Image (cartoon, one colour):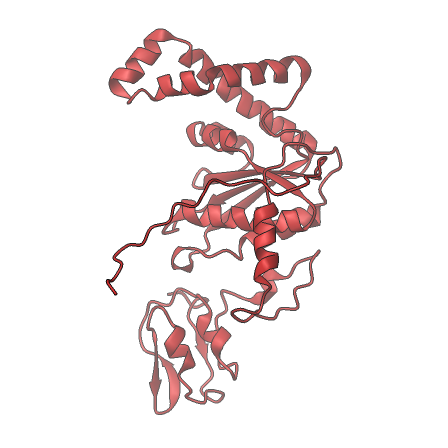
Length: 305
């Protein structure tokens, strides 16, 4: 535990109530002579102890609500207690968010993009590692440059997939991954590349004005899950702000397989990108939420009654 993660304890303020012990997931705190103490190493800075302390006797310097201050949204900094929020309104937001593939040419303001990245950090992360990275492609021109890099990757991949010998090799030694791509995506991608090159039609980002790339730095215990939870935060908040979003899996796959794209964007090679979110002002209004397949629900280890 470094000095920034290590809890700072003010014995003069501590009343010995023990609430911090109840919420500490690492059991690093103890009561001695009616006052809180640090019993061992292992704190990962979740801040639960400081958040529950009624007298402000605990602080953790590595985390602060000041880091969550937003330029475009006033939160008041107050915690919503369990059950306080309107569940129907939350479900309506969840139900209404859908992928947007029709955008206006209006740009997305820089402070909105930065606020969305900060909102991403409000997601949970494994062992509170908070090892996210947020790379912003801020405008349409930059997004077109990003798109050109993605197009080059898929041009190479399509040439390879069109080669029968390469597909045979893939079937024999690579679980037919190239053959699956050829059957499922080759024609679709080939047409999109043709339109991109001949007419500039953007079938990748759908005319979006900007993008946020959600990645993780080394050290996260479950990096992909952390990044996707942050991406969900961004998508929901964007909808509430009047911004449409679309997750671009083709871009993620290209960056995973060709690290030169990442280098061209100035993203350290030590990071991994798990989500690319296209954003823009929506040019479409829906009349009803999107339908969903029925939930598949089961009970595990159900006790007999």
